[in-house]
Amino acid sequence: MGKRILFTGGTGKAGRHALPWLLEQGYQILNFDRAPFAHPTIPTLIGDVTDGAQVFNAMTSHFGRDALRGGEVAGPVDAVVHFAAIPRIFINPDNETFRVNVMGTYNVIEAAMKLGIRKVVIASSETTYGVCFAEGDKAFHEFPLEEEYDVDPMDSYGLSKVVNERTARAFAARFKADIYALRIANVIEPHEYGRFAGFVADPPSRKRNAWSYIDARDLAQIVHLCLQTDGLGYQVFNAVNDTITADQPTAAFLARWCPGVKVTRPMVGYEAPLSNRKAREMLGFKERHDWRRETGAGQP
Image (cartoon, rainbow, N blue to C red; front, side, top):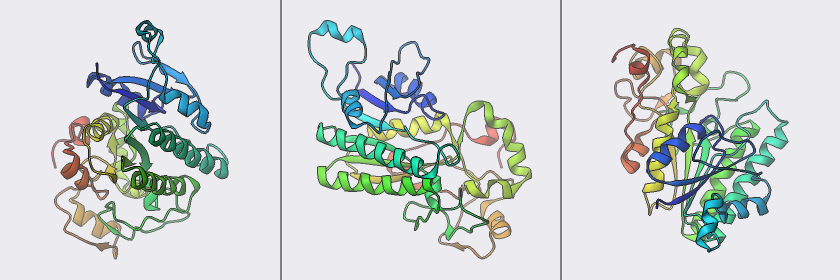
């Protein structure tokens, strides 16, 4: 039997692609969400991550009635993937977005640590880099955007993700656990590749996403790699595909559209401005869904 994984927020845009991928890798999965996920072999436990008791229960629950036959109560899961959140601003009032995202993450990590679960993967966001939901036309500090960047969001959603990263770091240090935070780029589902012609034709429209993206299926692969990679303690990884959503090499493109922004190292070829170098080097990530192949645009 594969490892037992609690996945919060699996019914959402990213989760509904990650769950089947993880199932194929041999994991047993329980989805914990406020809405069901229509999958024949992945059960959903309806619940709310802002309720600590519900989170504790989910981490120590049977995954279905068949488990009752064994005659043993359920122990804690082997790992937790935490994607449940209010996914952006303009859905709820700002203070509610902050409350749900921060307290939900705190509850999940605290319960996992105190139950002895030493592997947690949480969803952070590209919004931590401060431009996605900024007021006005804010410039990036530098390129590429790497994990050491001085994150400075001005919105409730991005701020909640910065706080969640600090929460993860604190618990990882205290409990000597592996807690990996994924700064997830703009998630693209397979049916959304028709949008890319518009992205290329209108470069300013993609500035808030740093002209970068993550295919939902490649994000699922990154989650799997995080679950398989032990011993890194607290880490932040940009979850992003390899290349820029533009028809020019990155260095020339940024010189035109972001003049004056410092470049801290050479940007090679069509490298995405939101860099995935750390995920490639430390996790072994290799993208499978380049937007040019998906759209038939061909190689640059």
